[in-house]
Length: 360
Ligand SMILES: *Cc1c(COP(=O)(O)O)cnc(C)c1O
Image (cartoon, rainbow, N blue to C red; front, top):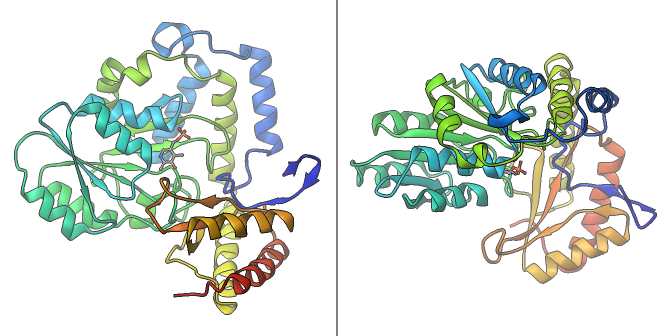
């Protein structure tokens, strides 16, 4: 990345596979802009829905093994749309405490009662579910938690959801494209399908390298969203060129597994070396590798010092994360090299030794 003319190595993008700058995506984007123009011109249900959008929806449905998929302009809007379509006042939504803000806001907008369970604690989830047997119930969770990088225990959640007649919805913003043997995401990682997790949300602005989001599920679910999701109906469709660029990205993800393999290698490499030098690693096995600092001022201080040495690593502080869990949110990408990780770790170990923070 270039900041004010200075080159730095970024460790904070969600472009996990390095596809945002891939020539095939750029080409697809340019060609589609020539063909369709820049803006879509209207909402999907008026005239904004082009062949490009439709083809992408079909390909996303196929990729995720579901009947249908529906594009939303952003992941934030997709979450608002699903939850407010399925739930109303008197219903209940069960949310992991560390869910993404958009899932919480989705619960608020629906007017359902929001019940938060302890992070990744399926016993707590089950206990809370069994207290409420009336009304519609929806369990909402990140697939990969965005600030911690740990993976949701979906196999247990799916069982519990079935036993309590609740819907299960997974927001796989950080899993899709990167997790699972073929990049199908957190469900593939756990060996689950559409019967286990009937509602899947994925974003296109992270591993897919473009912009926007989709919901995939049954014909009935998608039809309900088209009829009722206000964040789908009352907004301009994304540019068709974005859809074409995403189609190009999806092709690469299906065809070329070396990016995922290289990224997996970098994750293992980073963790082994970080452990050697005593950095405060967490339990994450994904591309999100936060270093827990605790004190927000200290986190900010280290982040600023890192930038001075040519590394862009943001300090994530409350209220984005719980009090006294300020952290350096390091994200790895298939575009990184071992040498870049070596240099980052060397600098980090100097700074963290200076600050007296070591692995708990
Ligand atoms: C990024 C993110 C979103 C929002 O997606 P946008 O397309 O950026 O609006 C939703 N959920 C999770 C878990 C995310 O990380």
